[in-house]
Amino acid sequence: MKQDYVLHLADTHLILGQRLGEWCGHNVVLEQDIAMSNIALDLLGQCRSLYQYAAELGGNKQTEDQLAFLRGERQYKNHLLVEQPNGDFAFTIARQFFFDVYHQLLCEELVKCSDKQLQAIAEKSLKEVRYHLTWSSEWMIRLGDGTTESHQRLQTAVNELWMWTHELTTTASYEEALDVPRPSDFKAAWHAKVSAILKEATLEIPAESTKQAGGKEGVHTEHLGFILSEMQMMQRTYPGMTW
Amino acid sequence: MTEQEIFDKKIDDDVRIEPKDWMPEAYRKTLIRQISQHAHSEYVGMLPEANWITRAPTLRRKATLLAKVQDEAGHGLYLYSAMETLGMSRQQSLDDLHSGKAKYSSIFNYPTLTWADIGTIGWLVDGAAILNQVPLCRTSYGPYARAMVRVCKEESFHQRQGFEIMMALSAGTAEQKEMAQDAINRWWWPTLMMFGPKDSESGNSELSMRWRIKRFSNDELRQKFVDMMVPQAEFLGLKVPDEKLKWNAEKNGYDFGEIDWEEFWRVVKGHGQCNKQRLDARRKAHDDGAWVREAATAYAEKRAQREATKKGA
Ligand SMILES: [Fe+2]
Ligand SMILES: [Fe+2]
Image (cartoon, rainbow over all chains, first blue to last red; front, side, top):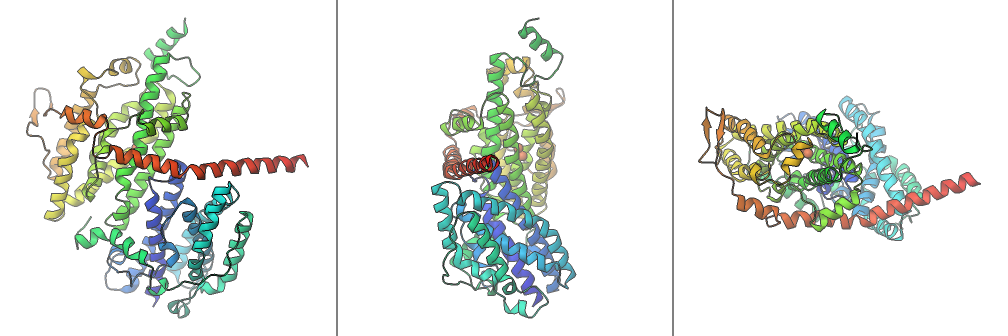
């Protein structure tokens, strides 16, 4: 049960880190290539701590790499939002911003939870996440209030990503059963923060759209299978080798 | 003393030339050409390695590779800044890269086909880069020399990481060893080409040496590289793909075979496997980013205006 929860956190970090890693070398300007890689590196670092903890909880001598590279798409528990393709820069920024608002709220709660390991991981993450949120909020405002083109691109991204954001503040069965934060408890806080930045960015808050969920329970979009087949290719092709 | 004499004396006394100092036009041009080629190499060089970030075999390797490619982006930035001190803007130098006017190291026009290529690049290519670059920490132009000090520190990390990947492969299964051997087979000669044409055919070398922009000749550095790498390859249990390679006790170094200069010039002139692919990727990133850079400028202007209005009121 607790392993499910930790894996859900780890998977979400890894998949978003993987998506951001796709930008490396191809970003809009060198400075932002570096900034986005930084965020990806933070997420990878956090996911490693989480997988190591999940491995410990499993008690069957699995390693972080086995958990990351040898589970299939129905076992992955990341949010649907983070597996969405990068799209253009506006899309990536909006996805990051929606996630960062959630991530900060989560870490602020996790530092208070009774599990010492999760607490420690969250404490370390919190500093990084605050920086991520500042970075993505600034870009939301810059693009939203920039040119007509950037405004339109970002508004489109916000609208199209909106249905995937719902899942960020849903509570899964394994979360109900544990002494961990319930994301549904910070739904209002997520909306308040997101609305404030969208307003400053002169963007419209999308009308209620269909709500997509399922990632946390292992039911994904078609994108995840492709992410995993690329990411897991080495471990699947050359089983059991040391790299 | 004339300005030229002051300049010459500084060079002779190993005093650094700084951006505000007088310098001969040819010195400035040579520096711009060399630093630009170097900056673009860092920038284009991100691509072949970034090619493996999403497929790295373990989480640790993924993070290390991403951090490495990020370092290369940083190197690009330092060098573009050094160029700006010579009156060459980043935009202008990128335009020259995109139009094909400016060059970058040909090594990045070779494809990264397997994971072993990532290890080999770190080990051999960053290794060659270090040999080329360490003397540049004492190059005569101040901003370039200082940029290189920072760059070199990170390059030696890269080289160690690359070697570590190779060690894991050579301690691995037959398949892994084969992957490592295949990678050195493909990368050895292109890496030797990184030191440039033979001294007898290198037009720019002599003046660069006189101005202490360069401190060792291409052939000297190439020899050093071979002497350094052959024992490392042996340690890894890999065969260097050169039938003529042989220890020469008399010169206390290795004799080695002739580079395929036809291939060298073909790739330099744009006809390697990845020349087009790499430049296309650079142009695409730049073009796709145009609206983002415009938005950032527009927003900065708006904000400055708002601040001004606030102060006025
Ligand atoms: Fe570099
Ligand atoms: Fe490097």
